[in-house]
Image (spheres, one colour):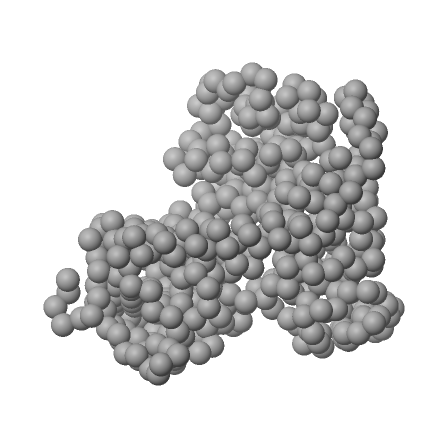
Length: 478
């Protein structure tokens, strides 16, 4: 162990990123402690990806069994579907408890000291932890900050946790409001729209930008709008801000035009979910004393190798990972960053290849992407003087999708025309979240579509939508 320090490594924050870093550090022989003020597992396990997937799995079954025409086309007849809201909520809560317990057990088994309390930095190698029994000072040769993020609530929106709430409360599924407004049409908003609509709620989606799903690839957004919105009991308002949201019965929402700021309409709904993104949980880390200027809306400035930066100078022995860095607000990105930092600490310099990290929305059907959008690729092409190629294949031409009677979807790949390097992939369709990994691995290895076109895929499988897209590049089809 490092001379004169309590530990080789202290990690502040026990989310997926901090937990992954701790396990990797122990594997590398580092004496490690992890500091956590709330629950082991952070946002992902307790209030994010894990419980929301449980709700999506259960509500997805309800949706599937309720689509009688779809089932009858396959020769199946199902009677009136019934569900128990509390039992679905319990399914999510039990899953969270199980995974959280497994994470805590893994820490104990591997000899990681877990310090319960809120950690703040005193110096680069010194952390003060506010515990139930008072303040505890701990030192380490290296410190990793992994404080995570919290839901962002715009000004003018009053949250009461019951009628107006964020995703933190929505995952408890304490009620099924007859009419719910969802502010924001990103991944969080879409996933909860999927859950609530499957369980019989009427939904209004409010988006401040001029179109719903503004961050999605246009080809994906077009199908997503038809399948996930227009085919369901969902109405949309785009180009408007929810300027004032007042809890109660009913909840009142004042919508103003995003450009003119004039009042457009006042909605009265049963509940409102605020899904306007997340902001870093960094305000009480005491970083200003080290000369660190937190960037709006709270990101910790980091170098390429994830050192915390004081102006233009990296702070030795102090690192940051996860949502708080603002690189990619994804649990698996945080985990990759944590492992990279541990490797760097151990003398094996490593950086994270963000282009190859995939993301997914677990709607029905799923949406996934990795790498560059078509526009980003074209911008890069202008910068580096190359042309961009695009190939699309549709699920309606895939034998497995036809057998499943799940033919809504498209796979789109983006590549360099000169070298064939795969730059991006975007998929909407059944099991899109699983299909994207093949493209992510190919981007990580900087593979060319011409070589990928000769990989053999199992027939008949959904993976052939990507196989077909690669093959189209050989034929020059777009």
